[in-house]
Length: 163
Image (tube, one colour):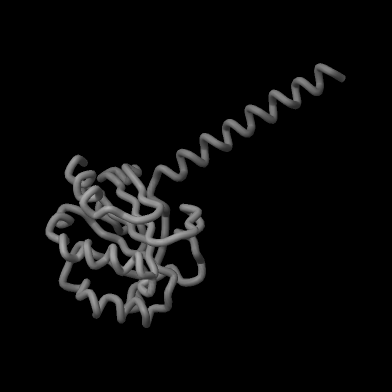
């Protein structure tokens, strides 16, 4: 009986270690998301270029912290020319369209804005509780850094330049 208990305990420890390592590896890659753009087309992660770093921002257009981030990001947008910026929200398409109009995102070919609606796939993938959330991925789609609270745009620019 003691041998069986020891065998079971070791097996459980190995299983938990494998699950933990798998989850860590999963969270280090770009999520295979899909979102609706304001023109009602679907954009998915598979459409992202494999030749540019990716800046993924999960945001709420009504959030004060998100608005502060967007204001600073758009003031320094030239520093992001070498990256693809993906902005994902959960808000309705109408609010996304208003956000795009207000921030004139269409004039930047490297910015894609959309909503995941109530699927909350991206939100659950990262386990988000607060916004904005920003993740920086290299050209291969590997996570370089993430900001779970306030995003420092200057730090983001510095990290982007080092990729």
